[in-house]
Length: 321
Image (tube, rainbow, N blue to C red; front, side, top):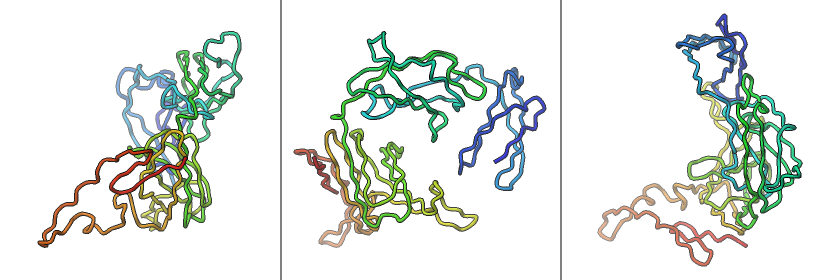
């Protein structure tokens, strides 16, 4: 992907593109280049992508409210045991100066906690902070202003992050034994109810274990890297190539505190979340009475929890201690 500016006064630009993505981001200093300062301004760019060349035109106006921000990226102030502290920016992070940051145990103003910080190799908007965090202790990380850099911006304000390392008792684990597992490497993912990937591993083999999982219900999905290129390739209609293999477990996996959940999954099983019994659409959707008429099947009842066993009309899920 190659992008060039066709505007005389806008020549200093940075272009970022995520592999396999159909879009690019163009970064520039609007004030320094005097672009879109008082009115909408038409900007033109040329691009060359996969030997396809064209030009695009967009209207731009500088927004004075646009500033670089830093926020916690940990889902709250409680950090799971053995996890790193993460912070995220709304701008791509190009450089950091962690030697100017300070990490302390809350209440201890005399000593500093040793740590290291790097820009995430998989997410250029994220910084990962590693340290020997102790369960149950509270920490304060101070990031002074102008110590986190984007291409044309710095964090304009100092920020202090307060967080605590949570107890292991508040988390569970999951072991998945796969039958007919992919011969290639694959991603195994745990998704929440909104289909967001919460946990993920890139691995190979017939057994996968997740430790330190937040109690919740998860959908389990596998994306096979059949061609070994490090990406899950979708269908290519132009070249008439099918998407790489994908599988979804037919049960929702329940994770509870202090429980080891074990599941065996045969990837050749035709059951699905929508049809967990593997019955036909007609059999699953209607019920025939003695008179020969059909009645709708009632919806599954709500889960009932009893003696650490979760029972539903579809499955009985019993975590193993």
